[in-house]
Amino acid sequence: MQKKTALSFWQIWNMSFGFLGIQFGFALQNSNVSRIFQTLGAKMDDLPILWIAAPLTGLLVQPIIGYLSDRTWHPKFGRRRPYFLLGAILATLSLCIIPNSPALWVAVAMLWIMDTSFNISMEPFRAFVGDKLPEEQRTAGFAMQSFFIGIGAVAGSILPYVFANYLHISNEAPEGVIPPSVRYSFYVGAVSFLIAVLWTVFSSTEYPPDDKEEFEKSKSGGLGKMFTDVFAGLTQMPKTMQQLAIVQFFSWFALFAMWIYTTGAVTQHIYGTTDTLSPLYNEGANWVGICFAVYNGVAAIVAWLIPPLARYTNRRIAHLICLVLGGLGLLSIGVIKDPKLLVISMVGVGAAWASILAMPYAILTGSLPADRMGYFMGVFNFFIVIPQIVAASILGFLVGRFFHHDPIYALVIGGASMILAGFLTLLVEDKGEKAKTI
Image (cartoon, helix red, strand yellow):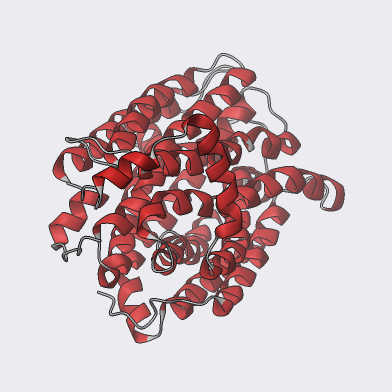
């Protein structure tokens, strides 16, 4: 195995920069897709099922892309970067199309395509850190990704508000039409996604395979072998990965509840309206974008604080602290009546988000074989998408049956789930816990 040399700050910066664009796209998706669906006629109780496209694409795409990228080598673009580029091109196109959907079914179909594109780019980025950085720099590498995720998400979340309030682009539209402020935001996101990913593609290099002959043999077998290997690997997960899977389940269940229901909860619980054509609803929906920008901005700052916190305590304790803060932030939304106070709630959510994007991966990479890094990172994402599928399947029923269709209770359930995830982190074995983190 090739010895990995420590990289400079700017080398880590360049290899992580593409996440700025990826999260720009995800932020637009997370803060606006429910709004798009409701504008096109979706009912509140139907939102979780309509959103199920996102986790299902991750469940199918990420392990396959991880498996393929482990077995890819291009003399110019390397192992992971071809997938960064392909996903960016597809994402750019889909971001331009979804805000122009003429009907609900078109928007749902475009969500599938858009999320597939995001996953093609995103999954290899996780393995990229494991490929390039020695153990002692991996916490810093994933923290840098969290920083760019935060910055990109701030930009994506805030754009509709900026267009409407500062550039005076209309925030309203006829029934069944997406407002111009949202459409223009998606166009900017499309361009930003492509430029950021191209920066990483052309400013970074990758280590070639250790044994090219063995590497070529690993590519033989065709599609049948690929699917056999992909699903057989589920029984070969390292112990640390199994333990982290439970933490991830409850963490991402909470996040998905937040992404689906925050717009409905804030507009109904705080602004007092469910009329998607009303100025008050659109004002509340834009404020949700600001709130999402706040938690992502906080995440960008906290990303720099996580490595020293992990050094002072350890990675598991650092993750516990951040998840508890996030859970309390979600629970607090249930008692807030002034929308400005939601900013305080989002501070806690931002701390959790920064840690979720860094700590599980920093802990995991130390337990994975180098030649299957991409594949196991893909499998690990099962435990991001499975809780989202569960949330999409049961939250609508729970909110409708037990909470009188009031979406604020979905956020309360999410807060409790995130706190539970924090305490479950203490049960995880971190093999790299004694390694020096910088």
